[in-house]
Length: 399
Ligand SMILES: Cc1cc2nc3c(=O)[nH]c(=O)nc-3n(C[C@H](O)[C@H](O)[C@H](O)COP(=O)(O)OP(=O)(O)OC[C@H]3O[C@@H](n4cnc5c(N)ncnc54)[C@H](O)[C@@H]3O)c2cc1C
Image (cartoon, rainbow, N blue to C red; front, side, top):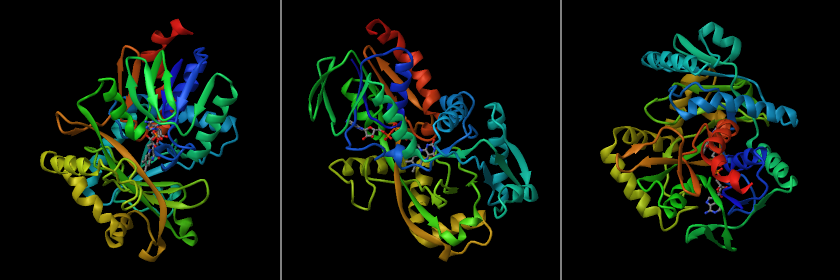
């Protein structure tokens, strides 16, 4: 039996890929009662188009391909895909250099992008503002990630070869092929760890990836007043600090017509710390300690840790987004309960945030670490790679 821990987009996509390869007996263990409670159901729903990532990265390899596969999947099943594209705008002249670097990366990654001036920008996003130039990506799209998850899960379950067992938490490893869970022991021939924000802890049970640890960042959102949603047609993004993995607070018009503004990347003190104190547990102190160490040792982390929390203050939040859209006022920004956690992997020996997806393997298990953005977009293409490169050889004897 192949056991997958975690029924987020990564676990479900790997199960789908295993089925394609002929696997017959797959169990997915999910600790929540329903799907999409964590990152896969709390994201922006943006299908990224492979712009930001250096050409040697897994993100670059799978983002654009994943975007195309996910669009095809959704269209075949009647799941709405908003093919509204995206613009990346500059707030000040100093950002132009990075904008050109993004253009070069996008070209190297084989995606379609165009550098546009302020007038051409208006044809795509009539109210977007930029300094001199902006980058237009026609392939970026938006989907409802919860609908994608739900559709995928019900297709897998109806096949009869995949069982998704909800409300069961993997707690420990007994010997080399028995999982201890809240609902008893599960034997496995091969184990796949796609546990999102908890993936490092599970990997450590297998003695895998011991130098890596997850540090959570909270992504909060606000919304544009409904009457002002006409200000945004699709996606308006800022130029990010490309030394860090976060893309910056952006405007996204979602499938329901709401314009979300976010997410922030504020250090959080729990892997599921969605509220101020909600989701804090015994680990909070140790996360705080890790944050303090990173604050002193890593200038890139320090920049994020010192600037992002200010965005809790409406004045700072507005100051950050105001240069991107014309005709927006502070009163147009309203609260939203949308919030997610980005489980950012840190190489603790080097005290560096890991920028790319990471797959680690031992004899009878594979561990997906750092499935951060754009892992939702990349999921189908990434799963093809994980299964053919790391799993298929191991499990085909058991098929
Ligand atoms: C605010 C935010 C915005 C984002 N925006 C985008 C975007 O626009 N586009 C994009 O491509 N990506 C985006 N991402 C990233 C994307 O959402 C994630 O990369 C992706 O959802 C990760 O999927 P996953 O399956 O690895 O993790 P998850 O969705 O977190 O799934 C892991 C599952 O494992 C379960 N689990 C954990 N531990 C255990 C255990 N011990 N036993 C049993 N079950 C367990 C959890 O309950 C969870 O359901 C965003 C992320 C955030 C947080």
